[in-house]
Length: 96
Image (cartoon, rainbow, N blue to C red; front, side, top):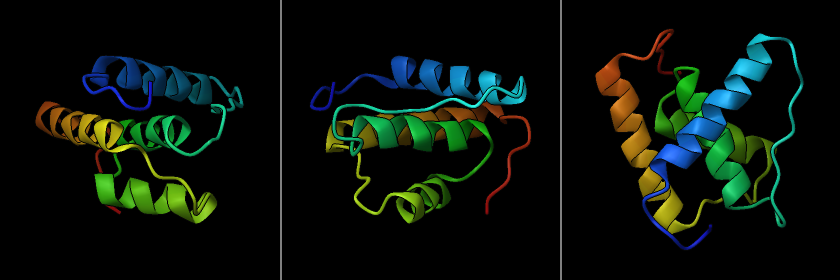
């Protein structure tokens, strides 16, 4: 949902699922109706899971799809996810 906060668990679960698919060699598409907010939130979270910083992940997603911009509530969820992954010491953590 675009305009609802508190979606950290759902977004992170989706990102981890995409990461597992990628690790298994499965190409996975991420999309929602407009491909702007929800899609970019999951794509950014996927990059967070892969060890990117929040700003680097946002830049990479926007480079691929310039109109990508998670709704404010989803962005706040991404900030919480980034903090959680940073505290947990996500494997392969790097800050491009």
